[in-house]
Length: 351
Ligand code: DOR
Ligand code: ZN
Image 1 (cartoon, protein in one colour):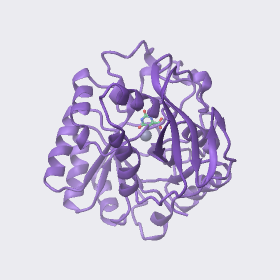
Image 2 (tube, protein in one colour):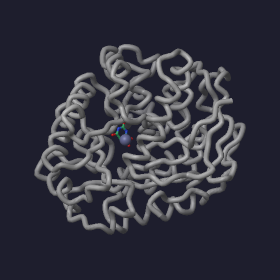
Image 3 (cartoon, protein in one colour):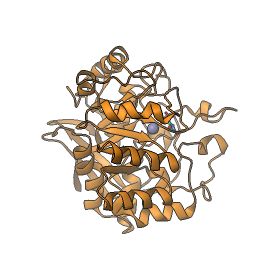
């Protein structure tokens, strides 16, 4: 039995408010616990989007009643909400800036709209950029010009990891995360995913891009799922929304990579606990750990998951490493396939 610290996923979509048929704070945090994750940071591209005190309250009130693991809620950067003082940022996980193609209404195309957010959002609180390729380069330039940290969400391309490496070497305050689907799937080998099911932003990349992420593992600060549940009916429709669920598959996939010597347990702890805790200023979780059976071999099945979306891009994958038990702040929160933490047990990391 392997004992890991409580793991942190700094990038999930829990769909609350507005799309709770896909997920809510209850089903999403249950999926997190089943995946060995004890803190989730939720994104603001909900309906309505989270961008001010009232909308933040909508999400936090739902979370307070429903969450079964600890959580934080991001606010989104919009065209009219850049007059940040201390109050709202103190209650939020951080500021999310959508600078590129995404799902939902929050998107800032014009760079004049980026500037006041970089100027005003408190420098000790995280800014996370959804940016790809050249918009990622622009986000890193903003971090350098305004001398503040920026965290780049879900990098997927060789050109991205190489530029982040060069920026870090020059002292620019940039960190980044990578998602399992960009490490284990490519656009050349989609493992039989039909059109709608392979839709995700950033898109699956080439085999060469995937290889370069593995080769530059030391540049990657965090693993994050970008858990983006849409129902199987929505994914198989004529207008499939982009996004993959990931909370229940990240750890078995990464443990399988450990068993194949592509990754080490210290790498995994660094990228799923130590680094996200530092980057996002997260509190200690005393008496919190995850027990894993490293030798358990099993098949991933959507039918066994807690996420409400009812599918996974990794259906039928054979993995090695199963979460047996999660203890969260002294209480057994998950054991042998059962969620034991009640709704409302989860705490706000900014509480
Ligand atoms: O694939 C994605 N799904 N990319 C995004 O940027 C948003 C996400 C979602 O919310 O579904
Ligand atoms: Zn996302």
